[in-house]
Image (cartoon, rainbow, N blue to C red; front, side, top):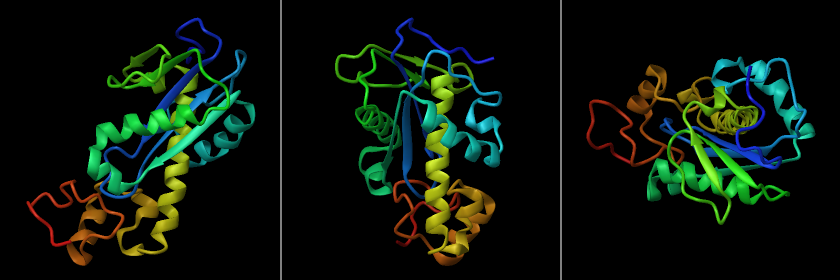
Amino acid sequence: MLASNYSGFSLEAGTDEAGRGCLSGPVVAAAVILPKNFNHPFLNDSKQMSEKKREELRPFIEENALAFGVSFVWQDEVDAINVLQASITGMHRSIERLKIKPEYIIVDGNKFRDYKDIPSQTIVKGDAKYLSIAAASILAKTYRDEYMAKIHEEFPMYNWKKNKGYPTKEHRNGIREFGATKYHRKTFKLLPEQLTLEL
């Protein structure tokens, strides 16, 4: 059972990101403020859920949240500032998009930079402990998956629709055969056996 609140503040935002470990595509972050009595029978960490369940939950979260924000940090920016900074930047931008200012922020993971003057707390595996972080993880993941399915149409040889840009054997075989695309992260080791890749 996930807890509804960490801080005791009623306007507590949970934030999380998706796509940190991917070779291609953006890091997508989300922030969510849920009402006090929010509940859903299968809301959990998005990684524990089927894609179908996540897709069902997304509109439910968006309709019932007090506020939510989603932001994309594109692959060029990930390369420019590194993936950890991209994750934190994405979370900040998502919080910025909330139509209600949170009184407190809870963050999935163990790294965060203070956002303005709002107190915050990092929580390892927070997406499996707190409802608002779980909700943010579902929004981040579904928005990112939707985007990866869209760019799959442009470059179907990597099968991003299925692997979402993660370093699967199939994705790496695609890179081996066809090289990297404009959506690949140039600073990531795209192929284990290559130190440099012709771009």
